[in-house]
Image (tube, rainbow over all chains, first blue to last red; front, side):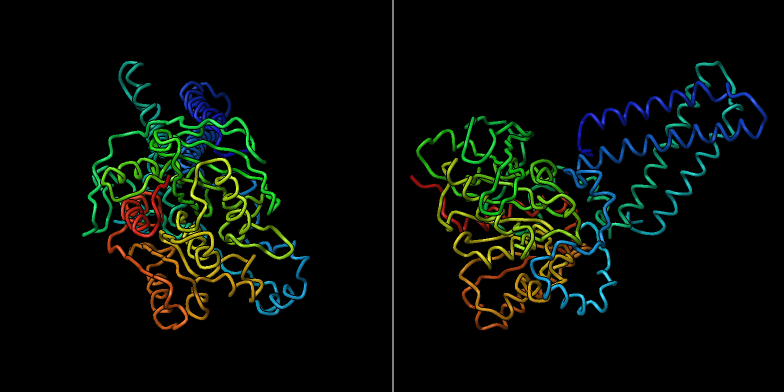
Length: 112
Length: 385
C-alpha cells in the first residue's frame, strides 16, 4: 500500500473527522456502570487522538516529498542482514568476521 | 527551547495529557446553552488531538536524529530563499510563486519506457525499464521553458538524487527545484538545465538508510549504480535534446543523494563533470556496502579522494553547522584528504559550511540551491546548437 496516496490521506482525514463527531455524540449516550462509561469515554478520546495523529502524519509524509513511500518500508527490519549476497559468498564471510560474529548490525541512524 | 530538546518533548507530552484530562473532567461541567457547550467540547477535543499529534511529531523528529533543529527550519519563509551563502555572484530575485507547467514535449512513446505522465510542479514521470541494470523504476524529468522555445538546441542536464528515506518527489515538491532554477536563470549566470530525478532506491525493501545500495552495483545483487548512470542517461539522451557529453552533465543530491553525487562523479568522470553534495556524508553507511570491506572502500568518496588517483572533475560539498545527522566536519575531512593526496590534484574539491544553515531537511537544503546552480554553471557547458 502506498503511504503517499491521496486516497489514503482523504480516508485518514475523514476517519479523524468521524471519530471526533462520534466522541461528541456518544460521550453521554454510553450506558452501564460508572467504570464502563469512563472506559468508553477514554476509548473514544484516544481513538479520535490516534485518528487525527495518523491523518497529520500522512500529510506531513506527503508534504516532505514521500519520505516513507510504502508500508513495507515502515515495517521491514532495518537491521536485517542482506540475504542476497549469493554472488560473493567469500566476501560475505569476510564481512561477517569483520563485524565480529555477524550478529552486530551497525547502529541505526534513520533519516540519512 | 529548540525542537530537538528534551524540554520540548516533555512540554508537548505534558500538555497533551493535561488537555486529555481536562476534556474528561470538564465535559459535563460546562455551563451555558447547548450550542456553546458543544463548541467548547469540540475545542477541548481538537486541542487535545493536535497536542497529542505534536508530541508524536516531536518524538519522531528526535528519534530520527534531529531532522528539524530550529523553528526557522519549520517556518522557513520566502525571504530566506535567496540562499544562505553571502558574496555569491548573481543575486536571485524573489520567487513569483508556482512554476508554470510547461508541456514542452509530451512524449507518447520511447525506447524501453512508458509514456510520460504529468507529475506536478511541471515535472513529468515515466517508468523506465533499464536494460543495462535490469531495474524498472521511475524517472522524473523537467524541461526548461527555453527547451520548447529553441527546438534545435541541446541542453545540459542536472541529475538530482534524493535522500533515504525518500522519493524523487522530495526534489520536485519540497525542494522547489524547478522554481529555484527558473529564478536563478533570470540572473543570467545559470544555464537552463533539463532536470532528471531518478528513483534512488528502486529495489523494494532496500529503502532504508541502513539497507539501500547507496547508488552502487552490488556484486550478485542490484546494479543501482548502473541504473542511475547508464540507464537513466541513455533514456534522457535518446528521448530529449540533451547534451551527450560529460561536460553537459552534473549531479546534485542531498543526504544519501549527496553521498551518491560525490561517489558517482569520482567513479564516472566520462559521464559527469561536476557534482554538488548538499548535506551529504562521505563513507558508506549501509550494510549492503559495509558488510564487504572491499566494496566499502571502493565506494567511499573519502577513500577515493584520499588514497586513489582521482579524475578532473569538480565537487562542491555544502553543509550546515547545525546539522546533527550529517555533520559539517565530514565535508572538511574530504577537503583535507584531497589536499593531502598528491594523486587528487586534478580534482577540484570545495566545501561550504553555513554556520546557521538549518537542520537535516529540505527547507535547509533549498536555501543552498541558488549557489549550487551558479557554481555548477561555472563548470558545465551551456546549451548548444
